[in-house]
Amino acid sequence: MTDFEEQLIKSPEPSFEQLVEGTEFMVGMTQAGTEAEWSKKISKFEDFLGIGDEASKMVLE
Image 1 (spheres, rainbow, N blue to C red):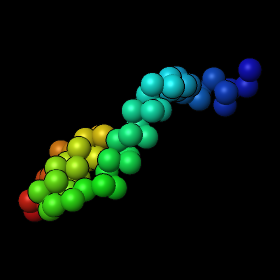
Image 2 (image 1 turned 180 degrees about the horizontal axis):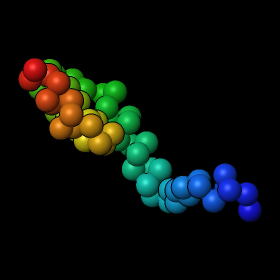
Image 3 (image 1 turned 90 degrees about the horizontal axis):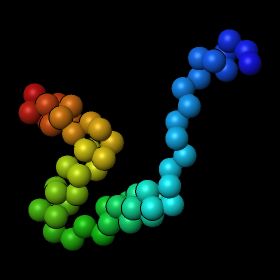
Image 4 (image 1 turned 180 degrees about the vertical axis):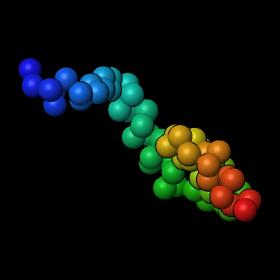
């Protein structure tokens, strides 16, 4: 094994359930109806990406 390969961080392969859940989440994101629903979905998406708090701070500034 080379030094480069030792430095790589191996991420676990997602399970089938995780892939289905992620796909359902993304499809749901495209089906927002009202502005309130859309706002809720944006918040969930930010949390999904792990940027929820950062994005909220930027909007408030």
